[in-house]
Image (cartoon, rainbow, N blue to C red):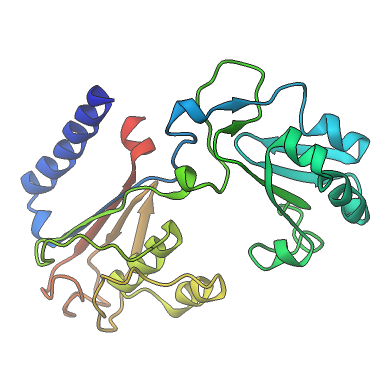
Length: 256
């Protein structure tokens, strides 16, 4: 673990050194995030469940599932959902599969899209007990579920004019994109998309003035590039008449 942290520290240092070498550091907002955690962090809680579960319990109604430390289940026919939920809800099957909560029907639509209208959305989602991994192998941890170890990750934001602070308010990765949109003052259609997904900017990011900006994206690097349309407009982050850069990287990107 110490070696991995040292690698990440050195990699971020290379980002910062290059930004300074290019004269961009003072006008760059840097966001370091992680797209997920790993569960369980405490390997003593690990409980591997093999035997082709949960398909073995659901049977032929299971068209496809992604089961790691949670389970996303697509059924051969959405109308089978109530019957499958009934099977999964028996005390014996809940114990066998380590089920903590079942999302289906309205409870699923409250948090995700309607599977009847969006085929990407599973018909059933299983939240399992911390430590449960659907594997017959030797892996110690997995991701893709909804336990605290999965979703509680670090989020670092750095900009020269921001005062050092530790923010304990709960935020999510969904708030990173609207924060970038606010920082770059992007076009309303993109902001509307975030509003439709109920994503808000991070609470520690101050209100930015409305300006025109051009988004140039490549992987996770986002840049407000110069152009005649806004060359004489002070940017909301740096307040200067020059391009502003935002670098967003996940720890997976740094490791790759």
